[in-house]
Structure formats: structure tokens, C-alpha cells
Length: 144
Image (cartoon, rainbow, N blue to C red):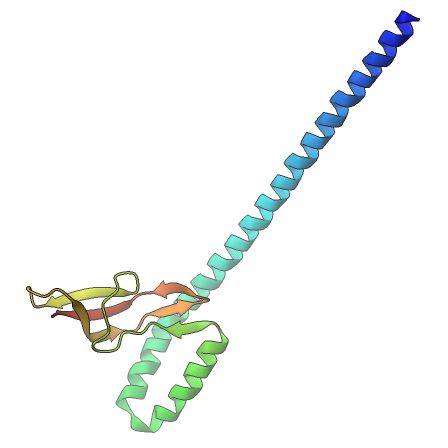
């Protein structure tokens, strides 16, 4: 009878061991699946950002054309609406706006003795895409 009991215990131990292995394998697989999904999402996001980034020089050209030719000004509202629908928006870099190194790229700084840095001129607009900075605005800065 002891032999049968030992056999039953051995079987139960083996079942417990195999059950633990199965649970670990399932957990490992689930973690792997989540990691693959995250990688896919990151690649999709990077591809979207890369594609939109390639369009920015065209937007810069359109901005210059609209500012140079008054008859193109009606396009500006249409362009802004379309950009907003696509999740693309301009970073505020108007004259007098506080300089923020996370949003603005200063290429020239005027004045040496100022406590505060404000934007003097926008040389190239910056853009957010889906809430993240896609390209910082290129600006001249005044220290006041």
C-alpha cells in the first residue's frame, strides 16, 4: 500500500510540476505577445511620424507662399483646418512668446544681460503631431 501511495504522490508531484511549467509557458507567451504588439505599435507610430515629417518642407513652402501673396490667404484657414484634422498643429512661436527649449530651437540670441528670453522672430514654424513635438520651431530670441 505504501508503494501505491508513493506512486500517487509521485504522479501528483509530476502533475503539479507540469502544471507549473504550463502556467509559466502561458505567462511567457502572453508577455511575448504583448511585447510584439507594443513593437508593432511603435513601428506604426514611427512610420506615421516619419511620413508626416517628410511633408513639413511642403508646409513651409505653402506658408511662405501664403505670406507673400495676399490672394492665397483664404487657403490658410483651409490648411489649418486640414492639419488639425490630421492631428498636426503649429507650435506657438509668436513674437513676444516665452522661449521654451523643448518647443523652440534658438539659432540666434540678441542681448546678453536679460533674465527672460522671448521670441523675437520665427524663422521656421514648429509642429506637434498627435500631441508630441514633431519639429521644434526655429526662432531668434531676445533677452529682456
